[in-house]
Length: 285
Image (tube, rainbow, N blue to C red; front, side):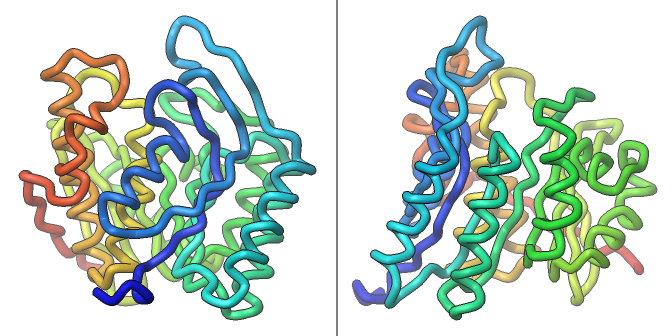
């Protein structure tokens, strides 16, 4: 690939000093795929709050906005192949991030926008309701791709948790808000989890096993890998399947090593090329 053909992605989300969550997970995931990652941090934490203690908090919106405008200026000519937003922390920062994405898209300097509406999991909401409303009413209609977990999909749609039976209908509801493609992850099955994906070309299901152990940041890494595979030319079903396979292999390695954070360094090659293979199963509409 010529040097001037390197893909680039703007990723706007949190960062931890220790561990692999938010941009700390997204950046190595994108780099593993040969994609330039331009990261703007919306929060600075010592580590994931799931550990016994942590320090830090949201970044000041005025500073986030300044950084966004700075990278826009630096990349004014080439732009970005895609943009991702993840954990935003506050409504004000959410607006700053979305405004930046809109500016880039309106000027033809952003290929597509992936919304990861980071707001909760396992029955717990960890952002303010106003941010959930922001995702639903503003970011979702502006997105080209949305990647909520099952709990977040339920929050956005104000419905019960999607099941294997109800998830296809939930995904189609998300698409009616505006995105061209969607993936709902973490849908419980008798043997593990399923991811339901879809767009104008149809719906697919990918089933994965449950791997116990540290998993914080897995969703952030998945979103980045998915975007990375898409900008590198993979079809949507293949990109999702490959990203899920890498996450499965990283989680298995993390469990094997007994680590409390994702084994990103030890498994860096798995981000680029997973050992596991998943085949998307088409769902009849």
